[in-house]
Image 1 (cartoon, rainbow, N blue to C red):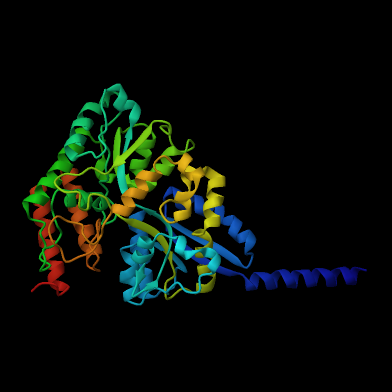
Image 2: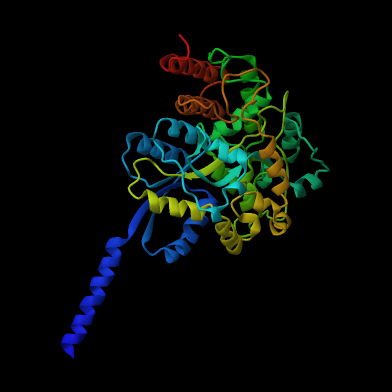
Length: 437
């Protein structure tokens, strides 16, 4: 009896150890935004359905993510099996051979349900290189209760002159309420994501048709001076340290009357578990100045598989699950329809439950459909991209310029000094890149 029991135990142990040996571990690098935090929580469902796959998560803030992902894929270090990237990186990384194409997606995934503009933005030479988890444009979020209290009315299409007027009327520093909050944390995808749209609508460009940097122009000076003055007068203290997450916390905590940022911020603001103003938020298109061109961006956070991934098949299986219709249903069951990953699928916007729960859905969809990366400026430009320039050099240029503008916001240098330094750095980078002599 003892021998048979020992034999049974040995068999079970061998079987268990064999199962562990067969288990594939994939490491996923993502940003620390609300959508990703929910995905990590709900991914236990995937592991239950796929006991042969174990998920290891690296969740970091946006600037760190971009740096670590770029380093990993460019050096083929194989640290990550799945990485979170966007419309800027996907075609550039794919062209350099750093990503695996997304192939053999099952019919049940319904790739045609994914908005074509997002699929195209994540493709290179007609091949898809990432599956979109969420997608967004930018818009104005504001406190309707504060507007009503002051007798203010938001126009159907606000201008930046309107924003100045509203911010001045709504700032109440004695109560800890600031008229507006905007990104100030440096980074090409942090402060420059918003600042680029401001530059575009003020008539500025990054380069002329000969790829000469145009940062030392009156349009840049007018836009950045406007931004710095507005934030110093009616923005929160320490604004030069605030990115998307920090501003989400400020606005959701009732400390800001207006916020111009990603449409994906609307879902968390409607989540009563995250937001103190869930019943007080209204939405409008992103403001314009001299032109509507480039006044609101187009972006998608997506999951891509590095060429150096150690477990590409398991990584693809998880990416398909995380970006599927089924996951959207799962997220709706967890946090409500208003909090599901937005912007990727037609079926989400056709869903009456989503339309009812997410009053921002129509504004988001219109903003995404009217954002035009091929025509981001009032003047002709040689590049594609609204809140970025679609060339490899922009990652470094945009970050350096973002640091200078953040320094101007923090009064560490003047706007003129920031723009002069930025022009010099951009000229040097474009010469090194062979764009100009």
